[in-house]
Length: 91
View 1 (tube, one colour):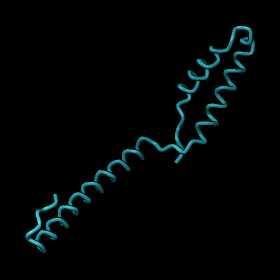
View 2 (view 1 turned 90 degrees about the horizontal axis):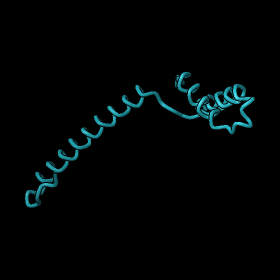
View 3 (view 1 turned 90 degrees about the vertical axis):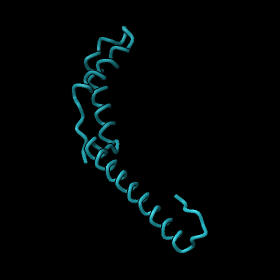
View 4 (view 1 turned 180 degrees about the vertical axis):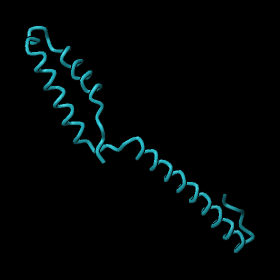
């Protein structure tokens, strides 16, 4: 899935980067700022990122899976205890 890049934040970051350039090189500041923005945008689009929504969906799936695993472990321990009543339960 493609991530929507917040262009306002990208502009702000490019502005901040261009402000770090020494004063002697600032005559091409606008061009430099656009280059920073372009490089940042290209780099960010190459990253394999997920949206917050996708992350939350996977988080919920993981939590449900963990709960099911815990339940199955308890069931197995109970069944093992029924097969061998002399062994203590392993919860």
